[in-house]
Image 1: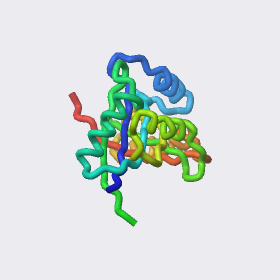
Image 2 (image 1 turned 90 degrees about the vertical axis):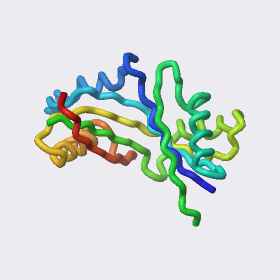
Image 3 (image 1 turned 180 degrees about the horizontal axis):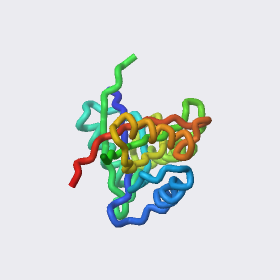
Image 4 (image 1 turned 90 degrees about the horizontal axis):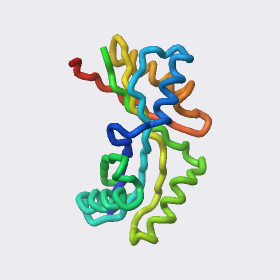
Length: 86
Length: 86
């Protein structure tokens, strides 16, 4: 069965986020003075073939630890939904 | 009132995603042969001060068009949730 996984990779608290800081500094120049706490991470979507949702989520979690995220400086959340078979 | 917005920026269909393609090519070498359709986009979280959720969502949508995303090659979704005041 096929599952779509959505992974959100964010910086751990305390880790510098230069991309977010740059955007936050740019927004007031465009007139947006009411925005704060801008943080920019990665959003990864993929399709995985697995017997059930638990197995799919466990595999994606392992993939995050090994390749998709850097657990030393990044946190991640995994969401898995079943795809309708065509 | 303060709202947290989560923006997911993805490539439009048909736009090349070299980062996703690279990850997809790397996964089989780690033993993950059941993964496909890897796409990597951005996840942006920010806090916005607005009178209500509709105003917050409208402002974030406008910010995406002007700065956070490139509408020519990227799609985006905006989700807004109210923050509990301390």
